[in-house]
Length: 217
Image 1 (spheres, rainbow, N blue to C red):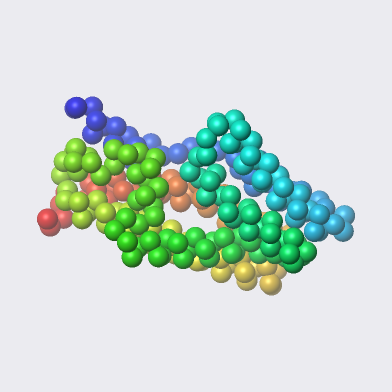
Image 2: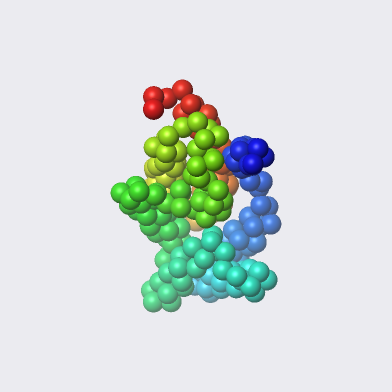
């Protein structure tokens, strides 16, 4: 029993590493496929190849693990929206705009989840580590449950704000900038920002809960 609180602390202090393989396969490869085809005058083909690559990658992850993991599962509806929208409009512009659409949807989901008892980031965290929020966990940090929930509500609000900012930046850059500059912004605002946000999300709750010891009950 004495080792359990240390596990909680380690969960908050270690944080995730940068998954370079996912960055290359999941982000750089599809963008490269699209851009090469665009330079060859086949933008629609490039968009479909990029979407097809993403679908194949998700299918391979499922085949390898034989189970549907949380984050790949959340990516499936987004990729399907990209595919269906691109096929219906027969325009690569829809594929390019899908990142802004995705961020807008996430912003709405994060913001809407604040209306419920457990916001979205809290749900994700507790799925990854069911020990979070237990009586032993709260006793370790010597804080009431309301302070435990406050950390997740703040984090969820931050994720919502970042999602809306990214959507706005992507929309403006797609309308105003050359394709090369837009693709660079699309890439930089995607996976790299996600990694930074995940690292922040791992560290913020522990910092907040340690401060909660001095907060009024």
